[in-house]
Length: 67
Ligand SMILES: [Zn+2]
Ligand SMILES: [Zn+2]
Image (tube, rainbow, N blue to C red; front, side, top):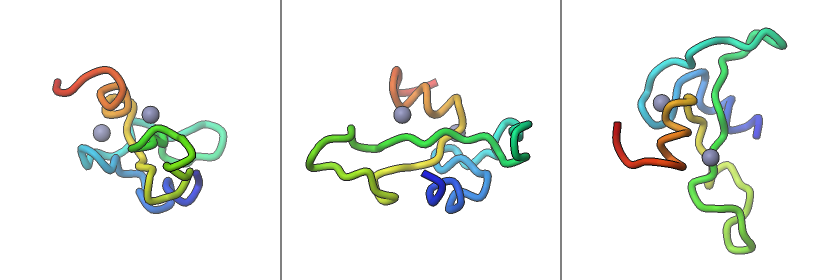
């Protein structure tokens, strides 16, 4: 989901923090793409259904509700 990462511009779209590091491969900020609704027939893999998260927020999105 390159479009999501471009939109985020290196900033987590949940907590607003900068990406924790940049990737060695291409120097881009490291963020993970998370789908707000699980991928299913009714939830297309679209930019509107996806957000760029830092690793902490991504774990929280899947496994917890608050820090
Ligand atoms: Zn975050
Ligand atoms: Zn996710």
